[in-house]
Length: 256
Image (cartoon, rainbow, N blue to C red; front, side):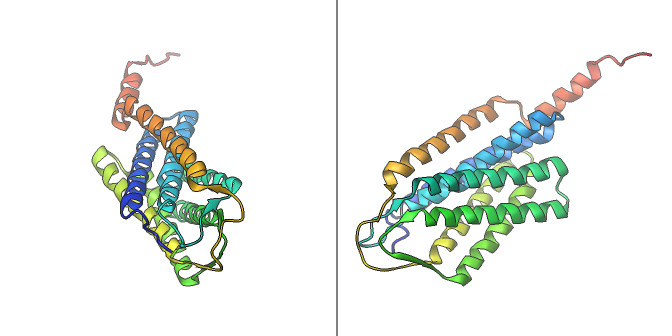
């Protein structure tokens, strides 16, 4: 097995995509903190969940998978499972953000949300690996699988805390760099847990990586780029708070 068929190209590309997704998500959740409208907060939290879960996690995973090869065993992917893995990643992150976004970052909520997000992201990872169609059989090292689960839960908990607390572009950038590193760490730990046995040969079914993953990765990533422009064009958290305070000062007080 080779995890870095194209050298540092796929890990670096995956890390950069994860960083962009995480930074976009952090920027979106900062806007969610600044609004008092439940509808607007829900929209921003959903954007954050899609950006982090879709590009920050799922796109990173499958870009990295493009660099994974096994001698004599071409890899295809099961289409429904691959799509399901993307939806799962976005759904669990969005749910975690809604939990802390509306209820706050109390320890209980962070622990429950982090456990849910972490196990959900790990499930996405192993579901994505289960989507691989190969002539051989996949086996896992239970110790490394456990380590990947721990990394995912810790990273999920930290990500929720960061989404609630990080303010300003500088801190958000640093936080996104750390979050992307955690996602990559979880991915490659999970990949290290996998072993292949069986005869070489063509895959029994599925769609080739370039035919399936190329359009999917491009679609999710371009959606995140669109979100980046929305975030950039929207007022920052501080600007939203200042505008709200100004509107409160100039709004006449009703008299009895």
